[in-house]
Image 1 (spheres, rainbow, N blue to C red):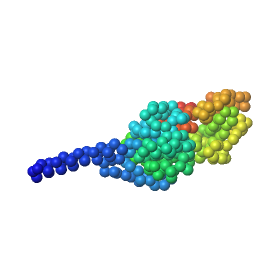
Image 2: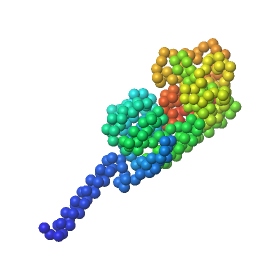
Image 3: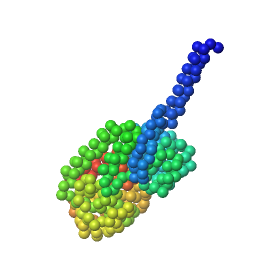
Image 4: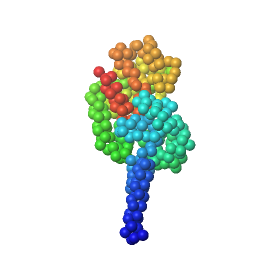
Length: 310
């Protein structure tokens, strides 16, 4: 065999292995040069691959954001999908457990390159992080818009969607500005109804965006800030007599015997200014209760309140 022939064969073999190597890396979502970036999140600092293609998400708000940024995922909890995420009912998306408990075997089997978890799974962080780089991009109730913007910018950095994120965040901020203009001089009370019982929420709560970012004054600034709100009565609402009463019906999401509209249709509530002026607003429970922190969900939250204010 001539020297020229041997050299030609070596070149051909090198090209074949080069193509194979590129295909292998491209197929599992890792860039050809194996680029990684450090992401700071609520549970620490994690090195993640740039543009991962095998992504598992345990937070519906993040799933909403990725969907609106045209980023595909391979799995998420499917047992309680809100309507905004109905596309994920398709069998091509794997069910990876529930919002409170991951199916660790399924997660491991899927060989993810990135896992984005929710606060409910904080106790599983170390275990998930052993399977794949895991980050937590939660919403800060005391600074909803600030944390929302930071989380979206983080997603933009990971998936090369900075331009798209900037556009979407700007739309939300513009709408919030319009709410601020209409909110001047208005106060409100927020109630979460749950099958014949309800709690009220104030500043710094999971629904505190209505007060802090939207600029609607809290009619009661002493409401304790807790995950489950502060238990209240209809007499309490009449006593505080807010300009607006924003109601979120948990039973519309979780099921129950009595809807919020049925609950609040009583003689005590009918004495309030909010009722007399047509200012009892029933917010979209799916958006506010199950999928906050996303792009479309946050936009819907802003738009709902903007439309309600007179």
